[in-house]
Length: 347
Image 1 (cartoon, rainbow, N blue to C red):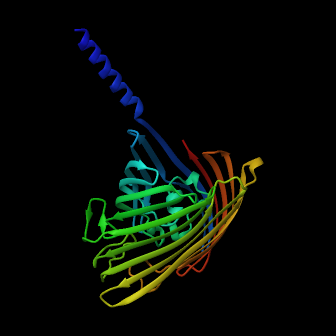
Image 2: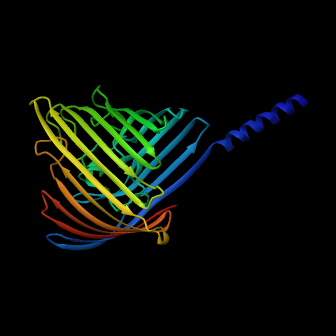
Image 3: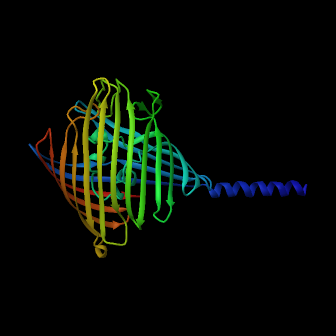
């Protein structure tokens, strides 16, 4: 009988240890904005931003999970659609070594720097809105920012802290549960960190898009397409020096196979901030340009140029006020002046 008690005690201890080892954290992000817009008319408004529910769980020493769900209000020209729920990330990670790990699920495309470091947790990013080229495609951006599939990655290789991300996904011709062609998208990101917090990235994205695909900008492709995106990035972020620097360049090449024509588009931005650490204040500025070709079947060719001046005040690390002035020129709308105040928190 004592042996049975002994075995039961051992099993209970193992079960308790397993529960203790699996640590799950739930965090959230939200922002509220006030803006005044001057273009052909004048309007001012308060805006409720996205509610971001962020979950992490360390299942075991090698297995972990990341989940990110967005609640946001959607509208179109005809009526209000109300709040919608979107799963932005649902990733199972299996860590083998620092230089080789495997992930599966839905994740941010490892294209460039900004898209993986700053995305939906608005309090964490330096500006109120993303630069246009790394904005959501539904809001006029030019990149496939998310995908479903598998990803191999590693970091800390050699003294240069070489790292890589290799993604194989369904691509643009798909939805969350179905791929509409047999080809897969491929994205490769190679990055180094020669000095602490100084990062250089080179990345590329390749995809085949079937005729009849409806893009997230509600454009229906009339030809089979090959898409190629190349990127180069530099970033100095969260370092000991009081400066913040992010610069990225993207080249988009869209080959329409049926007509044997090619469209070339480009996007780039440069961000600079200076941290006044004594008062937790960061003045910043950035220049942003997205040039979309007229004959590109994937993106509506509303090219945009923006100039931004801003101030960011950190009340607490996850409680931030931002004030921005933005001047924008677009192909459709000649100009727009925008003043915006944002209160963003994480909890």
